[in-house]
Picture 1 (cartoon, one colour):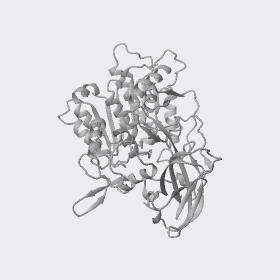
Picture 2 (cartoon, one colour):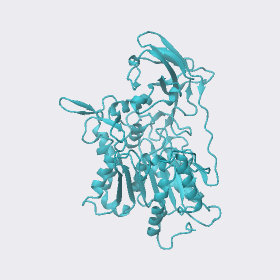
Picture 3 (cartoon, rainbow, N blue to C red):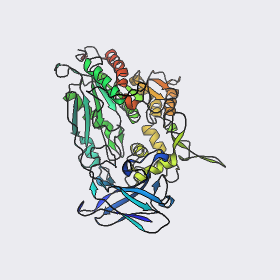
Picture 4 (cartoon, rainbow, N blue to C red):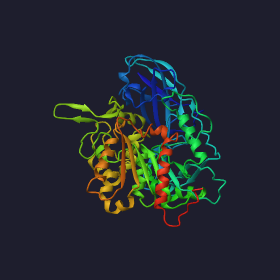
Length: 539
């Protein structure tokens, strides 16, 4: 059995490079392209296939040799009736300044979501009978193209900017842009001589400050506040002046590898750390009357954003005056989820002389395993080869690894066997293992980071990220460190990004987090401001 995929010349009249994702589902409630899940038991079936110079009217074939997830091969698919849908994630060629030419999916304003990316080709779901034991072909024609996304509009409180980055443009060999969504404080227009501190929100791609609700919240269960209720609370506190008056900035730095850059300089992704600190933040402060001095800048974020907030504070210690790092991605690569990149030989298995146990990758807060490492890594290989999955392991590898001989990120492990490359792990350690870097450079960093870093994490983090935070604390609270750099908060028995009464995905989207930390940030800024500092934001 094989599935033959094509697109007509009437849709695109030229050859295309890219990656085909074929979804197979038994659930008619949504399109197959929307049913991919990291939890293996909940996911639809997917297969992936690279195409280069794919011409209109010619077929690309998914068959038993194509890599799949959750089932590895098409031969393993039970006979039955299914809904099938194919999507072509279109690649473009980037001619980088380092001399490599790489084919990657450019972001089109959607935040690197292949199943929603404008310009990608797809078909309307087809209901077909599939039986791997019966020879024959199922033909799928991609007749649709995902339309462009309409940019969000400015409001009284919410403003959007987009700038071309000279640093990133030089690296990628084509115009590259950074964006920001800026939340203005109450009274911004009425106080034209006031200047404001800057609170940088790091996290995944956000098109807008969608949580800044102006309408009353919807009804919800009394025991759990809804997203709308969190939003309404924050809105009321923001416009009433009960919160310190600051600029809150959400940075948009989607790139060809992911929905954000991890906000550091990288051999594969480019100088995003410098571009954000040297180009974007100064432009935000210039346009919106920021104070523009290090004492008046702070960072916060959860998960990916938690790592970014911490990394920017550590790598640019004199540019920021505090980082709130919630449920951060691995801050010590001895606990890269459950893999010790320096001591373990294999990422997929805990292997002994006679027994082998799959290494867990994702869990519930009561310890139930939802995913293991081998299928989780294989999923990303299905989404894109050479580290082009635009997902979690892919971006960690793109940011942390040196450039491989083919121009793509050098793999941290063999994606088929899980064998760890110790040389690549050593590169990661020296450049991006934040706990190690703090210890290595303690004499230089310690005095400059004193009192600036704050951690919070659930102690049953869904991806075991609490383990690395504990390792960080073991060092920072040890006699080896004479500097009071950080404080730590753990929520016992709570999952990923639970902090202080709710999960950060809601808190960052609804105000409780800001209502908690903004007064702390304002007090710290005030206490550390130089004599004669601009305090016009305190009207």
